[in-house]
Image (cartoon, rainbow, N blue to C red; front, side, top):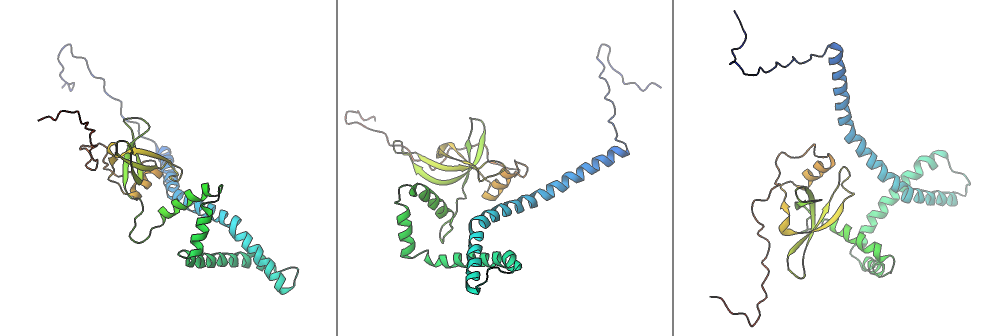
Length: 262
């Protein structure tokens, strides 16, 4: 009995695909080893990056704050004990720990001066020093915006902006809303974080009626940016289907010679 399929005369015959190659035992073992190494790397990278950032911050604090305070403590103990050399364990272990305690105590005490006239006078002086004010004013405003007080919220509005050209969009944090002087259109001050370090981003000023409201919250957006899209939520409001309702119409300039239309 012939098992060949019946094809009409003149119909080109489709060549059959070769069967997929089945890896041998060594190939399966090698693939399993590579998969496990990759999974282990994905598991270890978040922990390593977290401790690397903490170590980087601690190294800055140790060099700029803890070491100078520890030197002052060592000098003070040598002066009070009238000894030229202190024990090794004290200089190596006890002095840095005491310096950390002293720095934490100073920060705790500084909080009591947050609402006093002394703090207002220092801030007023730094804002008026010609060279220092250009650095102090932007830094002060950034930390005031990040400081979450009662009745205030940190920037949580997320939008999509067209960048770097029409057809592509980027997620951005809305930090402030202002208005154009001539057209009275609302403008959004947005911060666009970059991958994989969201702290190195850039600032843009975009019209509010040209952005798309993003349905992601701040945590989902940051996770998506840091991972390069690997942890992106499955649903996103990319295309805008209706015009924004917050845009106020611009009043037309009507001259006295214009004829009213019925």
